[in-house]
Image (tube, rainbow, N blue to C red; front, side, top):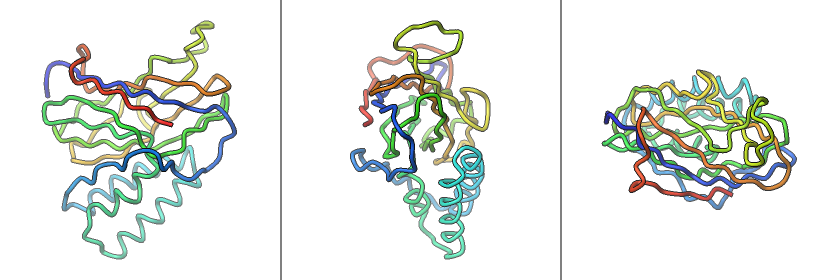
Length: 213
């Protein structure tokens, strides 16, 4: 892995309104289908992630766990089959290229939050570098109770199921993780979400902004 962290910031537009298990958005581009042969390994890793998701969103977690169970029982050989089941419920795709640069792209998950209530999303990690260092996720709009009244500080982002902002990675090509969002505002807002796999400065030349709606 490179000594410097490479960040990519995605612009997220989020409506703070009534929360529901809504259908995935149809506006985001489909996530990449990563080739691979270890279907059983991917299902095992995804199942552990869905057990974590079930703690925050039991309905969605159980639904996707059932689908993975059916996939395993069917003996499918398609590595992409698991991704097709989970990708529509991902908030973002975080891609780590062979040089360990990190990029964030919009997912298809519904982005409505209820003011003051947490909502849980899947995050897809495409790890071309085989990185095992912790993946950190942050927001420039980070809200804390001690943060005062700064108008743009309205969103809590937490890597759920581990450290507050760190995802542990397996080093495999594809991982899924769970992120928790909690909004502290009413109306339509936007936030800059950042991800990195180490210390350093942002590589502005690699920056790519993504609008999530």
